[in-house]
Image (cartoon, rainbow, N blue to C red):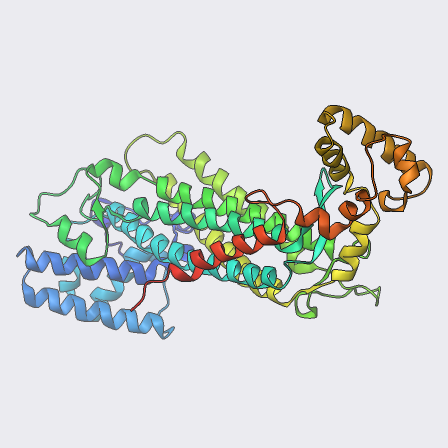
Length: 463
């Protein structure tokens, strides 16, 4: 089969080389973006009188026909035509004749593929921001239901201090908020147009790059043609942000796995997000959060893979850059799928308030409050810390918790203790007392929820 670029060659491409170098099996994902970019390019060629207007209209009609066929699933792409760009051009020539060959005037596959990826990643980034907002909404709804639900807060996975469950959940809300901000900022760099940079040096035709950028919704054009065709920073940046999002998803998933275990029983995941065992009929396995944890690794791998591809490349375009797409497509698919599962999984999980409260009633997570109590009585904190450490050791040896000790027992360690110590030690008081800004007191949590509400819902522009 004659290649569209085959004029300089005297031999056909080795079939193994053809299969090894072809990218159509994965870059067909860019079909609609490729047509979108071509539509803008041919419009510009016409407006700049580089090709006849009638030819431009014929090409645009042909591209629309091909787009309709792609949307209907009526197109078969061929490895013989290597990539999505050459496949669509061949389909166009088959559809409208030799005039289709004018489409590539003033353009290279190098700036063409870069344009396609900018268009693709812009669309996907905007969708991922929307999905993150849905996850945040689920977190916010569940948090509003559990402001006064108390569970142990942990450091080092050891009981530390009791906190509002809403406060704990909202930590993830703010992680995802930062993720959204990073993605929104990255759109400034994704939204640059490489179209018109040619293979690496620009073109001799009097093209209007600003026009194609405007038609495609780009904010800027690359000021350097070599940078335009070789830049993959915007993909690396996306993969980096995606890796961090998956880190946050994985951390929350780990908590769900722990919380839903028999040892904790803090939550129960909905049956629709769990599976059973082939041999143990009693099992209810949290497979979805487990897989979310695991899929984080493949996103990390895609980031490291692209960084490794790029690290030794001289300017400008190199065939190595063909390896930029599969990891990007896989990351988008993985991240979108993860976010689509996470939001309803949070929304449908059942919170076991009783189990959580039992946990904070049978530990020493209120010990810091006794130290603070002694400080308010005038004792230096470091001395108070030592006294409470001894009280905790004493209680452990007596098989008691701090609320189970008598006032006489407390007075053995310090005469500063009085009857009011027992009110102070109740979990609700412990949580409610932490009124510093950003703390876990119920009033502070309510303020935090109000701020989150404003961020999520007031940011939507009114019509």
